[in-house]
Length: 106
Image 1 (cartoon, rainbow, N blue to C red):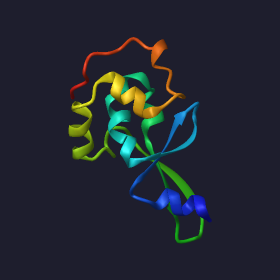
Image 2 (spheres, helix red, strand yellow):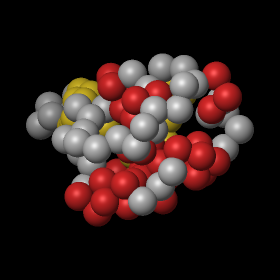
Image 3 (cartoon, rainbow, N blue to C red):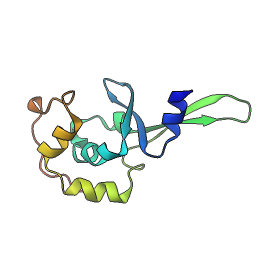
Image 4 (cartoon, rainbow, N blue to C red):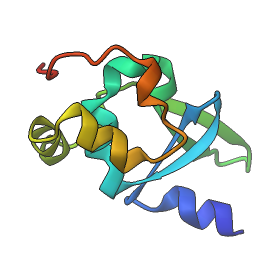
């Protein structure tokens, strides 16, 4: 099944970013997501992984944000402005309704 192939890719984040629905996010946008993390619910940024049991059952596991975020993504995010990150996410991300937080650092 195509969705299983997409979900198993290391280049794809599966989370509930858009309206609580399963969302597939390519790695090229992870730095923007990290930069804008204060604009989202942390639960929505958790990476959803499908675990297969030896009995053939499927179970969903969530890796909390930011535990799944690679170090290089964090470093790339530090270089982005709020506007650059918002622009990368496109029209569905309504930056006009959000107070622009200062540059996020951990």
